[in-house]
Amino acid sequence: MHGAPLDAGRSSSAYTRRTALKALFCGATVGLAGCLGDDTASKPAPVDLSGGKEDDQGGMVIGLHAGPNGQIFYRDHEPDGHPNPAWFHTLSMGLFPYYFEHQQMGWEATAIYVTDYSIVDYTLTTDGGETFISTHTDADTFGDATEMTYVVDSEVNGGMGKDLIPFSVTDDANAFVDEHGGSTVEFADVTSEWLSGYMRS
Image 1 (cartoon, rainbow, N blue to C red):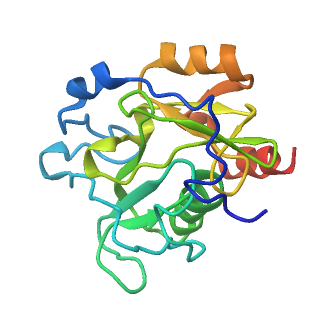
Image 2: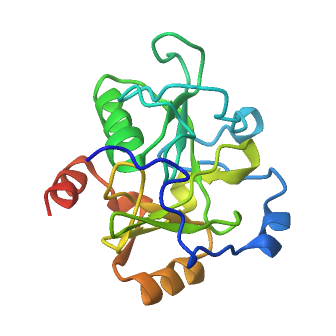
């Protein structure tokens, strides 16, 4: 499936939400305790992903297509061609496959960030009969990936189709499921095996 342009087929049903919660974010995130270590004092902050940055997993330009974005910082390694973080325009086909592959290579992630749809004014658009969620690239639109509740199997797509839609507020994720179908998973539920099955289903 080709990536859906950000402005493709914007429908009259597009809507915005979550202005109030943005103030709660304020650039602060909790440490990635456990799986990513506990060195929170030196944990890097998320960066802006605008400016033509190309996805480290597939080469697509971030910000030109719908859906959640992500970024991963590594302790002793860097992605090819640029300093940390590695950056992605999808989670299901970008961030998570890259994370699992490099985890097997011994790379230690110190921070993982994904778009937080609880704090952005997201919109839904329609194109070719399919529904897509907006993309966001500003640094303050990202939250700790390990603290998110992810909506999966809903009727709403990311830029390349089926994706995981992250919310820092579980009630927001549940409300999204009530409106658009699907179910929720936590970060710890997303393993390489789980992802393979999800993308095949």
